Length: 389
Image 1 (cartoon, rainbow, N blue to C red):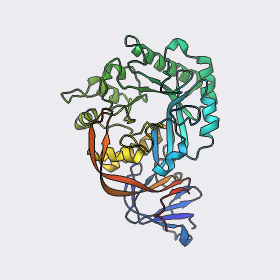
Image 2 (cartoon, helix red, strand yellow):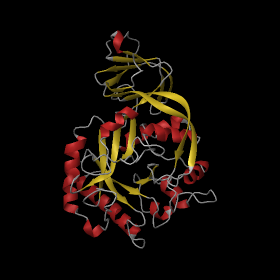
Image 3 (cartoon, rainbow, N blue to C red):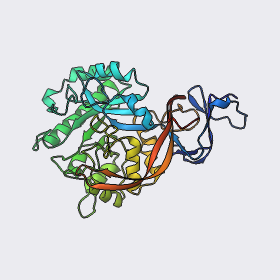
Image 4 (cartoon, one colour):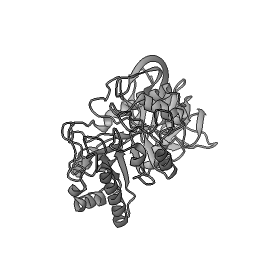
């Protein structure tokens, strides 16, 4: 049996398949190959020595902003390949009036696999100084329906922000309820499975009241924000509404960003046993590759290592879980045989440095995952200069 590549001698960590051991990975025709007991042939220069390295599924960044060229806050998806990221979700950078431009100009031309949310405000998120208006009276439902129908494989759901200063404090929760109701109506008409993703930083209502508006599969993002109405109280008790929401299937995404992560909020929730379902970056141009905040997904992973989480548990939240939410379980986010060969190789390196939260509280970190190689569909798309010589 012939392989296009063999990744040899690495420590494979794949939460989806439960693999946490040293083993070889075989790649053929874009996918992970299981040769069984058959001998494998491979050109010597296609055997990648990963000794001393960690081999994972390609990382999936579930909350990013990628409408490059159409929004001043966005980066291009392929800029994340050197970070070990092979798939990503755009968190509503485009709305009904410009999603098709986003699809044509970015999604179709990107090596990184991209899906996204459609912001209910028609213009999307164009610029930090242009605030969206989420008033349901401004929904262009007919246009929204046409856009979703034409892009049903790429649009995961509807997005809105529920922050003081963005929505009215008295009626903000009504805006969220209207979006949830609209998603249900569109699902009934189109046969889709749209979710609602809501930005929760400094909400005008408590975290529990906000979560009470959401149904199974909807996404409570920035779950460790500390600006106002956090999910965990000062006494260390979780908001009961948050626990009830998790019980009925609401998804909690850390979506760290620069202004949407609070160390105290994260420490309290983690101490209470409340881990996020997804860990993501909320990457935009003001923090991409810029320390000491959400510089990259490997840096955010390292943040959670410093907070005491286990690496396999973290990897599940940046591979298997987002793959499932993207409707691509078994295809990406795993190194199981038959999956697309989206692969990242990292060096786990000791390094002392500081990360900060939204109010510049410092977190001392002692290690970091350093990307060495990234494969997408069995092709090397990034290689650190000293690796694979």
